[in-house]
Image 1 (tube, chains in turn green, orange):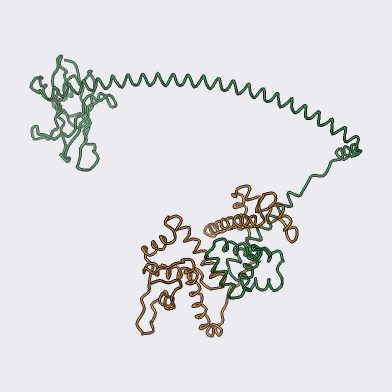
Image 2: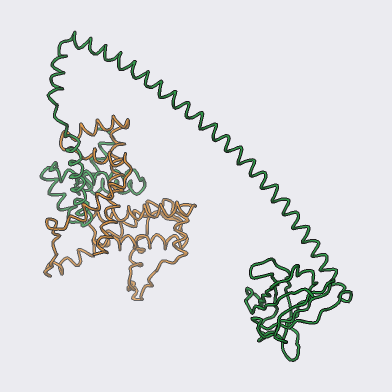
Length: 318
Length: 218
């Protein structure tokens, strides 16, 4: 008896409870130590269930199986599963066994070629015709396929070249634009710094007092008269309450237009007992006459900026 | 301390309720702690995932051990075995062969159960016990067949074909069919047995899960 066969038999007897106590303990010790022995017993359990269902167990084995294993709900479940598995396997096998009935013309053909001479000649002719035909058709197919692939490859190469050229152009254009914007930005920053460092050198415009929403400015108008030469614009943004540590303001041309001026870490001052945030910036920041919007955010320690108010004003030439 | 086998006083001291020691003082119940569990996992393998896999294998082996010995409440006894081994590891006891130690612990728990069973046998004998029979004949097989079909469909094509071919014949035809199948697959017969068993195991697991979901829906 081979080792595998011996193991299978021992496992089977262990499950049926017919192995001696000593042998059972040895097998248990082994299955705790070796996963393959454990798997062998699990396989023996599968096979016992199958043999039970196909009535392949001896009378004694059947009794033992019912007494020792079938009362266990897990095994009872496994038996039910095995029934379904067996049924499915047999049904599949039966379906694949069903073959179509031979037709009468086929039977006649077989009868005609039943003599060895006829059959030999026919087979040789058939091989030649089929082989030649097949080769010819295959050659045609390969030729067409090769042409099609060549055309596709050329087209792909052309598209690839066009795309590469377009990407290069776009990249160059973007780089130029970026460089221009950076230069302009640097220039403006320098200008702002020099102006802020020398506030006395620029004429200060009278402050334009703005209320949130922009409809209640003093003098009923939100118009800012732009001077013909460089001057310092002053905007005073009225606060309804002072709830934040700092404020930040952004002046834009229109709702989504370019940013004309931005300032952070602003602290409120007082104008006629009203808390105000004052913004000062060179008039050149307001590049063109038109409607401007000031967005004011409040900043509390360790939190995100919060929206406070929006102010509107119109810049007009003097 | 250096030991391979659990000592005799260990199993009795770790039952799930507070018990009386021979001296009459109550013994303290040991409950597993996360640290003790971590120590057990570390003992099983250095890699945590591998340790988890080993833990599951040991759990399955213990469960089958108690089931194959027809012990009642096998799950409960598996927990008990784990608790005892975890306790010894937590206390710093050197265990040379952990798997042998698990086996010996399981065997001791089984012996205790047997002893307890014998003690209560007389009481049980005189108590009429009504066991609800499992009605295998009239149970609703439709969900099982439905689940089986779905799970079979989910198997990879090769696995599906193999498992159906493996079980399509009976008696003598079965042996011939399986030999042919092994030749077709170019593997020895025993490897075919193992392969079929593993596919069957996965399929059964899938059907069990599916039936569980079906029962929940009901």
